[in-house]
Length: 175
Image 1 (tube, rainbow, N blue to C red):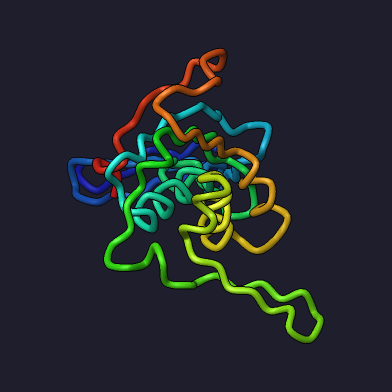
Image 2: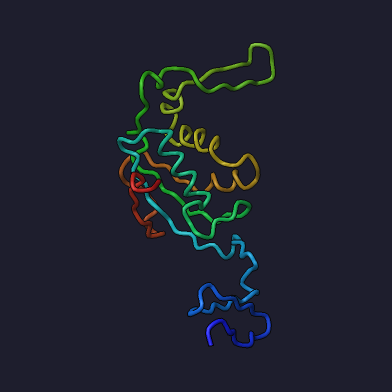
């Protein structure tokens, strides 16, 4: 007869959306499953920085490091992937941002304030520039410091991480 429900099994709830369909829901599945560092499935990804804008590239890399593109994202756990950035020396900045001082350091002594432009960081190492930008986009705690260690930056098209068999991705396809 329409509208009659079967006797529910223990720990299950039965309800009817329409007279022809009965749905059973297991109440044990209501528990939220949080990802842990051990349960996260990490992989190595290669990102090509040639012709990319620095800020846009780093914001996508920061999301990959945190694991925001994964369905098991947990804010307090390291569930993101490892990233290899190649062609870091061919990154682009718009306008005259290369020469405009935008980074400050202060030693704590009078006259100890120094300003640096992105070109100054690029002269030393592209890795320093990417670390500085990514550090600002990651959480300001122990997790953020740990996530920053999952990035490898290389100036040319070659990298030394072939042993981990990285997968190349196009960041323009990620939103």
